[in-house]
Structures are given as structure tokens and as C-alpha cells.
Length: 483
Image (tube, one colour):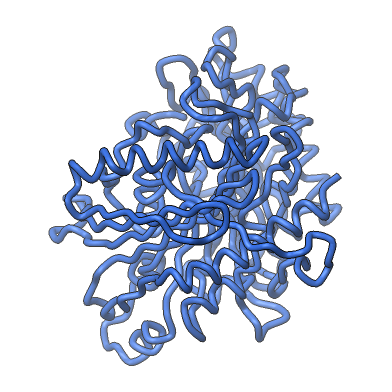
């Protein structure tokens, strides 16, 4: 990834991914008391994940895996639109095999990690269709997909990263106007087959690789890429040709309506006989949100996912695993009512103000139950060490499934450049073992008074058991539907 200090010119902003975490987000030596400064729901979720992602799991409830009643397909929610145009999911049109072949890099699924963020309204019971722009006051919305190709546990393989962000407008006229505005005053070139496009090369560079950014107009969409620049391609001519090829495939898939549903990564890779379980697309979040009380609402504007398909031992520190994570914000009915009654309204795009609670749902797949339990034991050992540093941290064993660890803590974080008052938040984390799987379930909330006071939404072990049932059914659904 390019560093923040080396971003491109403002005319071609980097795709707005929901989160930036490593391809292998497991480190038993991680300091769980550390806090990443939250900036909106994205940064809060990053903070939670980086702080506690190693130390959570869920337990096992015996249900018949053969019964279709216990593993139904989760509800899809309403069909999303951007004005009169259908909402398009970036990862559904950004094919890894086509991208890898075009860039001349490995297409091995066991050496991949994929990050995505997109709109999400699965918990919406009432609407068959939903104009996603009406859930906030922003004029556009994006969906994002970043591919990490050539991921290796020892770091020895060459890692190639390429990202696609689809900025979606209510009309093609607005999209074209936006692209023309980005071109103004720039020295950008165009891709060979797309006169309504622009790219800069190079626009940013890290220690090992330079990057280019490109934007292509298609109907009411602007396709925005951040792509690797080869050492021998200083002027970006080679990557421009490659992006031209990739764009043709992306547009074909958009026009074939392949992007109208989010991509489900269930079974993308395996460890032993245990498939990857997509923690966003396999879980019934309607049912899960009932645990928080009637009326609790997920932020429909964006959820984030990280799928680490490359089997890893984190350089020998943990049993071999793959994992999928889902990050989302939510608010309670009390907060919805308080916002309606408040005279101080949230600013457009203020996700953390409107949705001050966050959830992380992560599923680790191991080859067997013993490896899953070993992982839980390593997590517990590290928590004990961290408790010596973080006096607010507490842990306890819980009788759920094949073994569960509960960890609670609270912390402060904030960005001095944007806020004078540090953000205060509480975090509850459960690590639950379910056969060869470990579920991480983390619930947190920011303590705030404006635009409304945050509900003190904490979990009990009884409620955690209900969450486990939901996640166990997601496992059964995934196992039933993958080859």
C-alpha cells in the first residue's frame, strides 16, 4: 500500500477502502491494549481489529448439519440502488483470475487476500428496494475491492496489490462532470481504449513498488484503480495497457449485471477439509441484531470485509489457518429516537456519530478441533500477559461450545488534528471454538453525548450464546453450499 504521505494528486483520490489491515491479521504477540486512533466507523473498526483480532472465538452448539432448517441462506435485504441505477458491488466484477493473468502474476487462490467494502442493508425488513443515497446526504457512494496476490506466510513471495473503487452517481451526466473536474489542471493521460479516462504515473511509492492511479467513466460510474508500477515501467505505459484490458473485462461484467449481488467467498480456499467461511455473506445479521434489541440498525452505508485465503501459521506462531472478517457499525432504537429528537443533527457522512457501536465478526478455519483449541489457548496466554499492562482488561472462561474466552476492556483514542476530546470506548470480545473453527465476536461502542448520548450496550454471556447460535448456523450454511 502506498503511504498516506505519498498519495496522488487530489484530482485522483485513492479508492476509499473500508479498512487497511494486513493479509494475515493474526499475531499472538500483539498488544491487545494498544489503541488505534479512530476516525469515523472505519478507523474505530480498524482500532478494534488491530487491538484484539487475535484473541477471540465462539463456541459450539450441537445442531444437525443435515437439516436445511438450521442452515438457511441468510436474508439478502432490499435491492439497493443509487437513484434509479442499480448499486454495483466491486468485487463481483473484479475477477482475480483475469487480473492476475493480465498483470502476469500468480493466480493461486492459496496466495491471495481480498479486502472489500460496500453498502449493506441485510437487516432491513420492510423495503424491497432501497435508494442507498437516502440513508445519508452524500451525493455519491462507492464500493471497493482490493486484491492482494502472491501472499506468502514467510513473506518471501512477491506481493502484488491492486484496488478497484466504483464511485456511483445518480446519473451519467453527474459522473462525467466529476471526471472532467478531476481532469482540470492535471497532466493526466488517457487509457488506450477509453477517451473518458485519466491516469497518473507514478502517483505514489513505498519502499519496494510504485503505483499509478487511473479513473474510467462508464455510464453513472467512475472506475478508480490503484495499480502496481513495475520497475521497468517508469512512465506507466505497460500498466496503462494492462488496466485497459482489465477495464474491458470489468465493464463487460457490469453490463452483464454480474455486479448486482455481493460476491460470496465461501469455500474459496480450505485448510484440510475446513472451508473459508465468508463472515459477511454467510451470517444472518437480522437475527444477530435481534440480540441487541428490537430496532437496532446496521449502518447501511458501508460494511468492510477481509478474506485471508492464504493458509498461514504466522511464521510458526499459530496452527495453520485461513480467516474471514466482517466489520460494521450499528445503533440502537434508543439512539435512533434520540437522533430524531435532537436539535443538533449529525453531519453528512458522520458514521461514528450516527452509528457509535461497532461489531467485528471473524471466522478462523483450522484443519481440526485440536488446532482451534490450541489457538484459543495461545490467545488466553497473551491476554494474561496484557492484563499486567492494561489494568482495565479482564478475562474469563465461558461455558459455550468447545471452549470460549471472554475479554473486556475500555480505552481512549482520538486524532488531535480532528478532535480536542479523546474518544472513549468499551470493548467486549468473545473467542468461541466450534469444532475446527474459531469465531471472533467483538462488540464495542464510543461514549459520546452529541449528537445524542450513546446507549451503554454491553453483552451478557447469555446473549453471547444466542450470537453463537447465529454464527454456528452460518457455518452450517457455508459447509452445505460449498463444493
